[in-house]
Image (cartoon, rainbow, N blue to C red; front, top):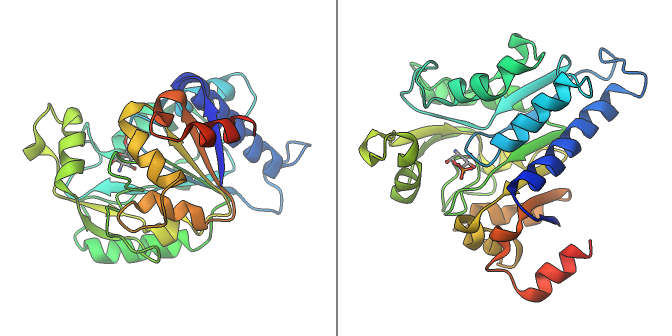
Length: 262
Ligand code: GLP
């Protein structure tokens, strides 16, 4: 696993955006032939506050003509069950407000789980089939309790897209988006599985802020454990964590020194 340590969340976002744009451009080819026979660049995406800076940086690179999303297909990792797409806290809304509306992505290339699906299990199964096309890169965040997408502690490394019951921890942490009221946070969500996310050729996780220090320690120095789902990244051949210094608070001095020399 590669651990990239940046001074603060702004620098971490810049590094990640540069990395993602570089991968999209490399896929498109040096001549900029974005409709090449190679097919679209398939990108997995997260929500949450951690990736916001990355989306801002990607939008600014798009506006500067440094990257295009015309030939990018996206799959978001999760969505709350029971929230309509136009709900202010739905991940549909988040993605369109913070990213998709500001770039040249084609609407039909955007995939987000439908929180209002009549048959959520069937929705998950169909989504998993779409995801089976594979991903060139999956961008993710991590919950304070180590969840990856909405794969809460106890999730299997082989898990696929499914309906998940959110932990009390997660509902308390996410209450800040729902007026501070935990009862307003949906109790369930639809989420890609750990197996789905880790099926990507590369996985890039953004971890910033002191509140994520324990999760980062578990991800980097802890053993592989379903109680810290992000630790399954250790099994991935091309796993990268980009973090800021605040998130390294619980790491050993030697670990930080080693990766800073990276
Ligand atoms: C939510 C999302 C996760 C995200 C996590 C961290 O629960 N489902 O995909 O990684 O929150 O969010 P934040 O970046 O706001 O800390």
